[in-house]
Amino acid sequence: MIKTHKMAWDKCLSHQIWPAIEKGWKDEGKDVHFFWGLAANNRPDIQQCIDNGLEWWFIDTGYLSSQITRYPIPVINDYDTTYFRIIKGDIHTNKFNTTTPDRRNKLIKQGIDAEFKGWKNNGEHILLCPSSPTVTYYVNGISQQDWIQQVGEEVRKHTDRPIKIRNKPRPGNEWWGTNVKDDLKNAWCVVTNMSLAAIDGVLNMTPAFTHQKHVASLISGQHQLVERPYKPEREKVEEWLNMVANHQFTIQEIEDGLAFDTLKEQYQKDG
Image (cartoon, rainbow, N blue to C red; front, side, top):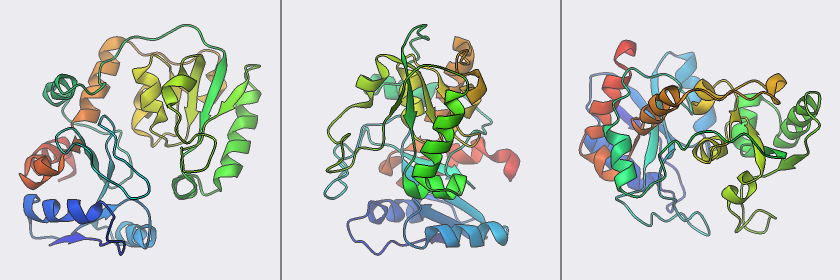
């Protein structure tokens, strides 16, 4: 049975996504749980799925996508180019079975930035990008401020470069109305736990250091090598970008069953 975990707020985008899941996801005769983000009761409910060995999928904004309007209420501005990531058993994926380029080529034709442009060999500051407080606590078990302090101290052991902190833009904070690309222009690297800023970095020629569960961990380095960041060859990055594109879908693709068929192939080894 398909079980979509409802969110009480009627403006939540999950209210548009769950009908598509319920229509396009094939019932295989077992309980399959779907969660939108980590708000409300999702964290304890996800843990219950983990404890009981139940299949669960996580849905959130896409990796390579047009951006939604987030405030004051979330709005999808273009349904054809807005993608949502669908991940099995975690909030990011770094596992894949197929890396066909078709879906990424589609993104490029739609005008979405999904091309690898190589790596730059300059930059001054370290761009430190924490995930939200909710995600940081879920992944790292500490507050966002503690993560910033601990990781900042660790990075300083290995470099004299200035550290520039960029938090998520929220109404009223200093990053509201700014673009991460501006902070990347003179960045030596991006350091994050689970922020999608790592993907922005890669697409803007800037190497990344991430948590091992981040989708970009396959092409990221370790903090102690901050002065010698990992810059994998083009073929590896292109393969990774193809994998990323094969884990995100529009609402229509979810409703049509394309998401189910594509992800079934990606996770076929999991049964």
